[in-house]
Figure 1 (cartoon, rainbow over the protein chains, first blue to last red):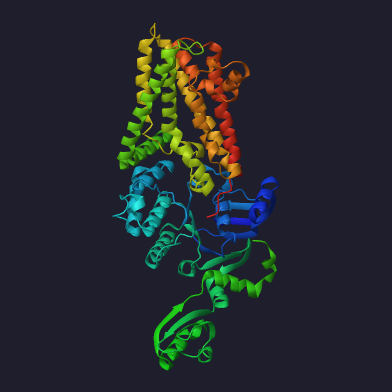
Figure 2 (figure 1 turned 90 degrees about the horizontal axis):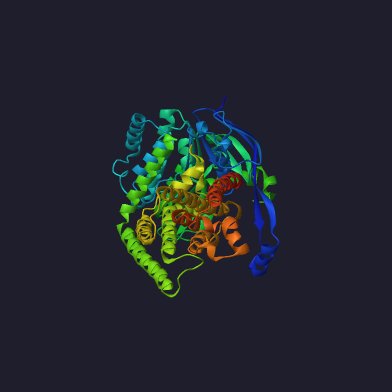
Length: 333
Length: 262
């Protein structure tokens, strides 16, 4: 039996529409027009126990809404969902003891107190026995390198440290299923890397099923073999990451800064020019020829700086649609 | 049950640690409360320099009433005050997500998470005023009067909390409410006057529609031996009724919760 199974899930929100300006506001105050936003529209997938799955999509695609339905926070408009054999929105305690939700933009750690105090509250809530609490805490503190942090007031911690504490707080009861919603948002590269390493380690050590949403391609690349791509409420891709990246992000961006101005036409020979200024130009280069092109540029021109950047996930997904499924472009988002 | 006691102790401990982080706040609050109490008691004394009774209430009766308001308000604000203020924001910003995803009674969690130690000063001062007022009474208060008083104070606290909770729960339906949340404070202000002062429909309204009478007037009457059994039962019924209504309303509101987008 899969750990998570979702059948034809839909979630519509009712949204009020307002015309701009004062008159519009007055009108909408008297007579509200509302319409449904299809945040999630007929999505089906299933995830096996122990899988680490990436959930990708642009803003407003329905990632967070799906996670919230899976966590039992939202009642779906339609469809069937089973997580570890439970129906999430019934919010049975047995279910809630088996999963955890971490949201990069919301905090459960008490702001004014050291994170340790939040951990102790969670210990009581999840009824974790003393010995096991100690053991899990020591283990997680060690992996996350939080020794010096857990007794410092949370508001004095850096964003990265706080995020680690959020993870720790969510994992003290050793959930079998973990929902991570943008866990690396706003973090610097080192902190992102730390979080990534930890998620991989947790998945491996405890065999937990993990769903991860992120804007950052690197997160997903580093962690997930399988990705689900959603856009405007529809599931548009379900498969291994290599396929997506090869097929839909088969290029990288190369930003070059020259010592002396270089003509656009000369650079266009290397690849598509995305943005051009005489001294700094960004080129779109096919993934597999990036090394050759870089070498060629360094050889032919006086290069001051050369920067290779992955395309953003948002863009990959956009790309995916502009080529593949134009029909959804009309759906209101 | 035992689990919730442990959880509550953990909450109270955290809140205490929290209060210790902000020592100055406690000091300032204490000074303000002491000044406020002095002015309040003095103003009652001044009024009674000019009149003998108000609606049949003598000065010592009014002081009992004043003390009761302070005690009830202090208890409710200590246990629930910060939580009620925070709840509206939890709903509005979608932070209820974390609470809802945990194996814990949601209402218990959002109602008791933070214990505010500051208003306890008011409870202590209220106790002092009560002591003074009772010493002015012609006859000592019998033990069953004191017991009934305690029971009525508990009812008063639960009534005030239920009303407050119902009002805040309405945030689920409207997204945000600012001034309506202040209704609790209006309730407390209104209860500073004995409802015996009012007549007819207004008095009925202040008893059963907006249960102002049960906040301070009824407990005070209990202490003064003036409470009819009917009203004692009415207070208990009102408490049970409001707790039930607030529970049902909360359940309904939760089904309506669409957590604010992250």
